[in-house]
Amino acid sequence: MAAKKSSEEKSVKKQKESLPRDERAALLMEMVNKKMRGRAVLMSASDYVLPWQRKRIPTGILTLDLELRGGFPCGGLSQIVGRRNAGKSMMAWHCIRQLQHFIGDKMMVLLAMTEGTADRTQARKLGVRIDLSKEEVEHLQQNRKIAGLPPLKKEELNTLFPPQVGTIHELHALAVEDFYDVILEALASNTYHLIVIDSIGNALSNAETENESVHDKTYGGTSAPNTTFLKKMTNLLTMRTEWGEVRDTALIGINQVRDNIKDPNAPYKSPGGNALEHAKLVDLYVESGKALGDEVPVYTPEGWKQRFVMTGKEVNWKIVKGKAGMHEGGRGSFVFDRSTDNVDFYLDYLMAGITHGVIEAAGAWLGVRDPENPAEYLARANGRDAFIELMKKDAVEKAQAEDPASILNHIRDQCFKKLGIDIKYEDLIS
Image 1 (tube, rainbow, N blue to C red):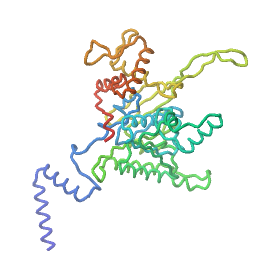
Image 2 (cartoon, rainbow, N blue to C red):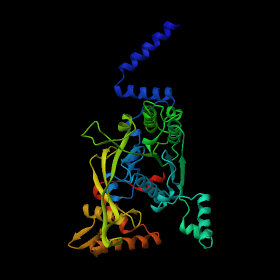
Image 3 (tube, rainbow, N blue to C red):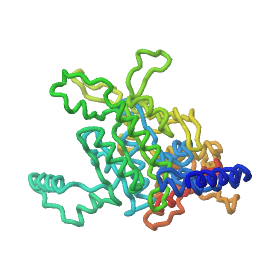
Image 4 (tube, rainbow, N blue to C red):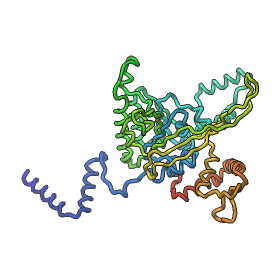
């Protein structure tokens, strides 16, 4: 009986070997996909979807989004790295704000926090609509009572603190192993549009949590858990869910830099181990640039004196690593305005529009022509400040009328068209 079975196997094998390669490949694919039952998949290139080809999460900073080919890629890990006060967390909040704008109440975001709780105060200043806790509202009302003011009514609270848009969950864990296990479960289920890890460099391993004293040394730290997590993350993101969905969650990891005293040619390094260098699709470096401000008269013990008062700063960025359809080396800057505690988006759109020929600059005059009637202007003003005011006024009017055809959107869409960026942010909802 065994001899007969062996003979049949040899006969089948010989028949397969006589088949053309494409037919052998089809048989192999059928066998693998049936035998492995989802543990491994063999497919044609046309069968797999690259999520980042049509889904990216914008920052809202147009000059940066253009270099990112629309934003941070979905279906992979991007890193924002930089020194303190460079705007790393701010950029992540802006991504959430953009998701709220394009997806609305269907937005799902996970904040995986190792550096304390998420700063909702900063988020609200940046335009993110995130709920206050019951205790925070009670504290606000108590402060009004102390000041002799009546408590705010529900309608007034909703005006001052608009209710949250979408779902924002926050993750904390004692050890990084548990922390990463939850993130991997979230990735496996394809629940969230965006997962923000803040920060990679501040995670604490299980071995470190068991130390009784800060004097106890632990060697290796989080390198091993990081490596394991990144390997599992990559495997999950290349496989479909059990119900056939492409996993398209975008991950943004925030990281600090350390002085690199061993290599004078590389002034900084970021924690996380070597595995992180290979796993990330994008590595965005940000740093504070030139301080902006004016000399103003200030009364001092020596009398009136001129003193520099900072009103904002430039923030410089550089794409150190770029995959998923982009290149490394792109760099630029934007202005952080202290008067609004936010990015000067209008100036950024102006710079992007002029750079890519969407905004015409003729002397002091700036204008955007109507594509359907090139002899006419959609917007035109004399001077940079006047043009920015025109954009602001138009943005407010269009928002009140719920009309998407604003000058800002036109500048963005035309810049995308000129650079061949085919991204529609409304696709994020699917």
